[in-house]
Image 1 (cartoon, rainbow, N blue to C red):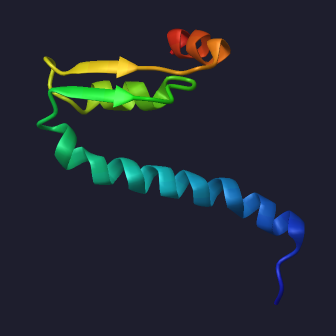
Image 2: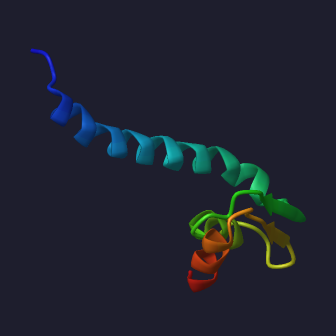
Image 3: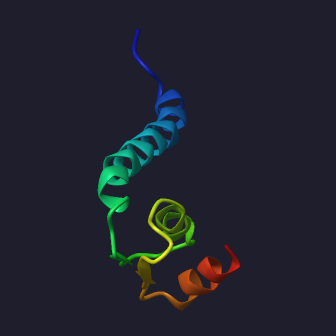
Length: 77
């Protein structure tokens, strides 16, 4: 049975979410010992929060984005 375009579009966000979760799980080991972390595309700030929640309290986290709107959104989160 062949998937329709609509069915494929519904699967893509879920697949991307799974890839994102998988990528985060790969970082967990290294983050436990991190002293400095850079989020070079802070976007909405969710990955920055993930970094903060999974690094030692003394870790310095630097979050950057070239889009002013993204920085404003990150500040809300």
